[in-house]
Amino acid sequence: MKLFAGNAHRELGQNVAEYLGIELGKVTSTRFSDGEIRLMVEESARGEDVFIIQPTCAPANETLMELLIMLDAFRRASASRITVVIPYYGYARQDKKIKPREPVTARLVADLIETAGANRVLCIDLHAEQIQGFFGVPVDHLYAGPLFGRYFIERGMKDADDLVVVSPDVGGVGRARSLAEMLKAPLAIIAKRRPEPNKVDIVEVVGEVEGRRCIMIDDMIDTGGSTIMGAEALKKLGAVEVQVCCTHAVFSGNASQRLQDSIISEVVVCDTVPLPTVKQFPKLRVLSTAPMLGEAIRRIHQNSSVSTLFDTWR
Image (tube, rainbow, N blue to C red):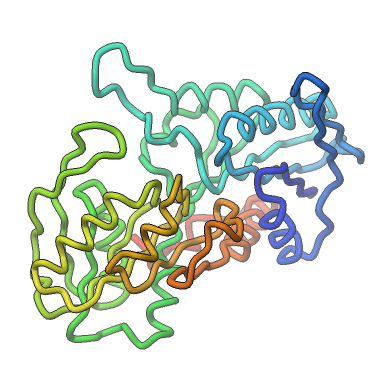
């Protein structure tokens, strides 16, 4: 087994390598004078079980193109199997046609990855689970929910009488219900609609939140607008405190400052995308996905079950 990482998130790749007790493979990625990516694998991959860690995060077009070039390089280097580890799957929000003449870009990206040479794909909390079906190769889908559950349990929030887990939309009910079961807490749902991308209108809140501490769980925070509006809606209904947890901390624009200035007391995220210092803020807590990814990679290499990692998370 050999593990490589692109430039999107080298730190995560190094942490996964340390968990597995192996050296991160040597690969050099530079630029030609016109901006084209020049990639060189610095060690033999012939006959190896190769794993490539590369979230297709911002700049999405750059990281995706680098991933495709890495795949082609290892395919031509005669790797026996290539597994792409994509902690954050870019373009996942374009998973279906909503209006006429719209593309299904999530499917296009899947086709590109598969055509470039991927034999297997490993992701964390896809924005839409049906994206697994866009691939013609096996897809292992990991869940960050247990990481959040253990975080809150360690802080004594299990079986708390005043706790409620909140789904920020109808589509995330399954994720919120699983966390609620883990914490032995009731569930509430925010019903909302999106008139256009990155715009949201709160319609109503289903469930009892008055006098309770709320934990709102989502798969990603982009601009932070819908998250902050959801927290404000809960506060207006009498919530005592609102904490937020999300897998992918995209944090576009001034999202970090908006979240810090909001009524949200704590924002708990995973390290599926790199978080530079300028995007970090006092209310932020970052949980490592390296042990989960490392264990999944080990099991894939050993041809053992990955799904049993989440037997208690359904």
